[in-house]
Length: 180
Image (cartoon, rainbow, N blue to C red):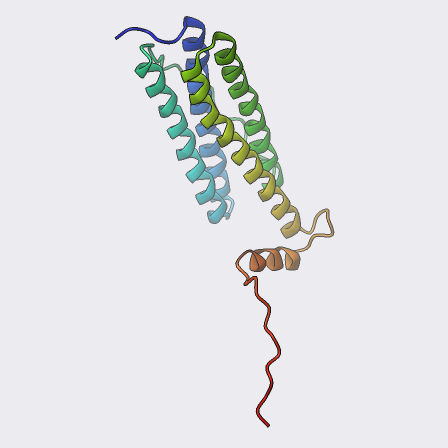
């Protein structure tokens, strides 16, 4: 099979593949921390994201190989220390996602510079995914602050109200005439 990505692109994609594996480790570590600290719902959410990061890693691996490059499976560093609390957990996750977005941007920029439109197109999926991830985690942080009674006038009652409104009808009840 002929190689259809540059050596530089192959290297940056391999680095990103390893970064996605590291992201999975972070989610795995934080999920385990949440589980042992009595937050099974948050743990389930984080375990799910761990699996998603592994899928991202595999997507990059397949892309490298399919373009005639060679994926390099390398060691990943250990996950960071446990968060101090839930707020810290989500803030750390957000920072990891922001950092990951910057690295995805480097891939897309290199693809543009090299006029590697296949990789540019491939990278767009990750750009969109990162926008979604950052938005999701920011929303979770907002909910956390509401539930914890922090900032924005939050309290757990507002959290409950917000959750209820997410599935509330968009129609109001009209007054009905009663039969006299």
